[in-house]
Image 1 (tube, rainbow, N blue to C red):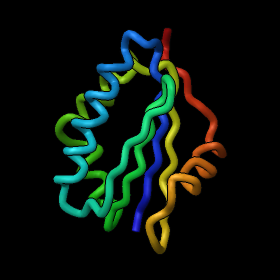
Image 2 (cartoon, helix red, strand yellow):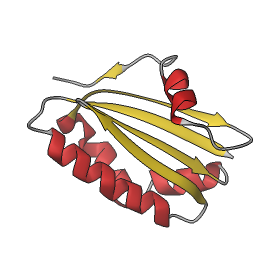
Image 3 (tube, rainbow, N blue to C red):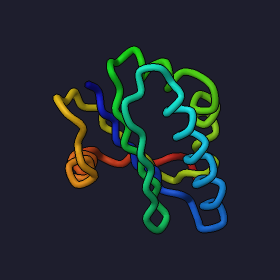
Image 4 (cartoon, rainbow, N blue to C red):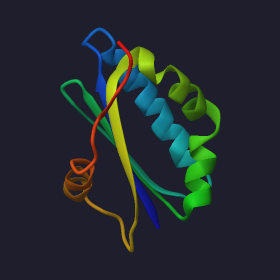
Length: 113
C-alpha cells in the first residue's frame, strides 16, 4: 500500500476558503479514483493536510496526473506559500499522528511571492 501525506500553507486568510473548497473537491476526486483506499483532509489555521492511501503507485499517479488535481498543481502557487509531501510504502493505513511525524522530517518548499 502507498500512503501520501501533504501539507499546504495558505498565503493568507483571504485565500483560505478557496483552498478548503479545492481540498474538498480533490478529496472527492481521490475517493472516486480506482485504487484509492482512503482519503482524509484536515485543516489547522492556515494549513491544509491530506492523508491518502492507494493500492499501488499507478493508482496514485493516475490521481495526481488527471482532472482537478492536475489543474490544482498548476495554480497552487496562487494560494499556497509553502508545501511539502511524503509518500511511504506501508503495510497498513497510518494514523494522522504517524503522518504528522513523517511530514515533519521533510523540508518545506516555498513558492514564489
